[in-house]
Length: 440
Image (tube, rainbow, N blue to C red):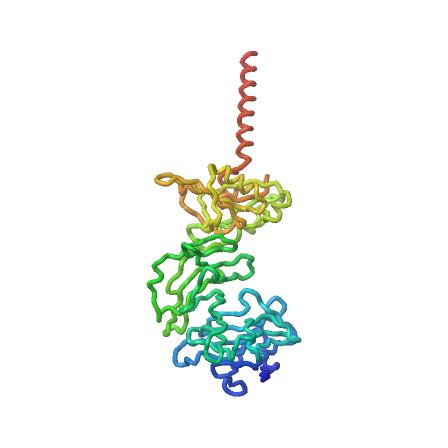
């Protein structure tokens, strides 16, 4: 087996982007890597935050056209270790990554091997395998990158045995296909939520986390044709789906079309329990603490679904003049707003609910419940929707804060019945007292 090792000393320039070009010279791969070859990428002995080591192995052979596709073996500092991955770049844009969904960590070396029997592997210390194509015994002869950006393993007849196009990440290249079994996925930093773009039986849809739709793709985007468009990508931070074209004048990629055009249409435009206003600023649903001061964090003073499931007494708070860009995949037909609130109260994992009602040709009353308080934005009143969040029962709302007074409307749900009972009993007691005084 031919083993090429990138020198370890070259990687001690920490906290900077380090790119090693493995091309003509000691590592003359040309446009492909054949079976029986192994490439090793060393990492620093001590962990260095921000470190990136990258060795470009081959390109699509289309060097006269800018930008072109290149394949790299990379090691990046992340969470106390070094993630080892095989990557495809279009210019400076990463369009595919073997570790997009599940990262492989190593503290020693990052090794790419195309075995004699045709299996492509990523390995760490002591031959620990972190990723593989599973193509042993299929007659694979070499790894190559096509002019479309498709990374493929082919046999002696150039028949494709494995291809990166079958494993989409957050970018869809021109010529790539998605079906009911595949989707684009992006992961925001420091968040447990993630975005997906999916093809369903009757529509295309963007989702946040577990089936919560945030937008639908309009059909007219199909009129955009190559060569202007190079790829479609799902943004990691915003979850916005866009078509990107290359500008030779600016030597960079620009969005030629995006599904969402307003900040307030992004589900994570504000922090949890934050409200995106007409001015694209973020306002908070603020609760007063026992120390008689208003909390500064939008979600501080509220409880998570885990706490709600531990027996915490809760109630539903309706917000005035707001809606959410999220939609529950399993919307329920509900008779009343109180019933919708109670549906959330009865589910400890529910943290918010949206009740929609309308008149006209189609009279509907629907209830959506959510496990995430996000995507809230200011809307004009009279839209026929009521957005409610679950909060600890008895919490005091700081009405001195204008941002709070503007949003709080009423507490709904089971408490509505309690209010009615109190009013009836109170009215009856008042009537009896007045009657007794009149008889004196």
